[in-house]
Image (cartoon, rainbow, N blue to C red; front, side):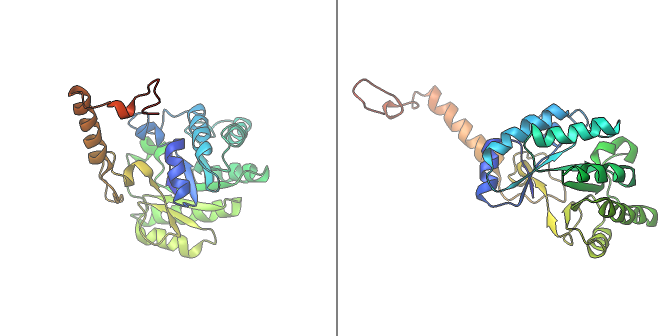
Length: 252
């Protein structure tokens, strides 16, 4: 599973045969430049889902439900979930929360929308949690995570995403749950993993958290290309005749 935000990268995700492309509310930080996911709107997610959908054929498309799109009245939450499918052309949604969203997970699933539940570190509750902290470090937190997984499974979630969960606790959830588990910063014992595409490509050299593996230094490669382009334009080496069109048909 990989987080993706546009058609160009979606085509790469499709070519690599990644199982799930997630349009995450992380776009608030990665694409929009905010310091959290909280400013992201339903319209933002729908816009990016539609873009990603155009680049996919077989890969499953999942939409994040952003902050305050489902924490309010049930009717509004159901409507927003439906918009992700109808307007965003997503095939499933993801909700952050535990026991407090179980009834909503059940209701959304009942109308035919698959739901992935997101437990552990919940970025939409960053202020309540006191920052981006690893969860499950004491018995109370561990029991809460295990209970959330059980309750959300019973509510009808088709998978559990664990973010920022102590690896021993994530292993227990995976062993005890009949659902597939997807991890991010939760160790190697989950059934699958998710990362942000921009992170594994190394586009932000200043972002180097412990849980991310950079498979490519695209920042350096892109910067090199931009510098070369700038130099060639300034020196008159680009464009050349081979990049131009003429009445004689040369360069076409």
